[in-house]
Image 1 (spheres, one colour):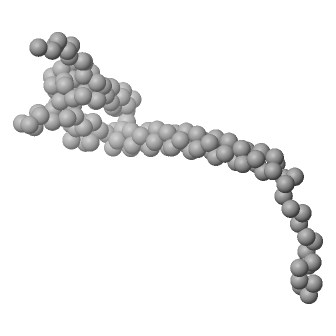
Image 2 (cartoon, one colour):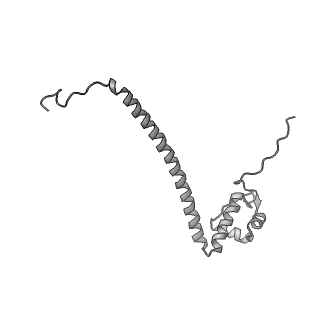
Image 3 (cartoon, rainbow, N blue to C red):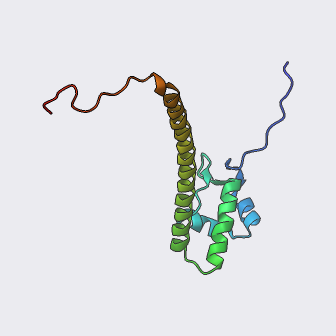
Length: 136
């Protein structure tokens, strides 16, 4: 019989917390969590019976939403802020990816230029313009 493996704790995106636990962890009322779900601000996982299950990432998102609403921002404003923050994060990731690609291409260009300079003495001499076709 193989040795028993120790179960790994759930990852931050694994939906494991029922609504009452999520409410307790965030200090929000369960009805508020349902309202945020209906507004599309947080999308918890669902059980087969339709019950909500929140992940650690969902709990953190709920805290952010609560902080923004406590500052007087309406739910639609919060939704827009979260949407823009997601866009900014995606653009930063894309910018970093493009920066890496520019570095790779720059290195390849420099290597090609170095190889070209090494071979330059072996290149044939260019004829002056018009020597092949004197009537041009």
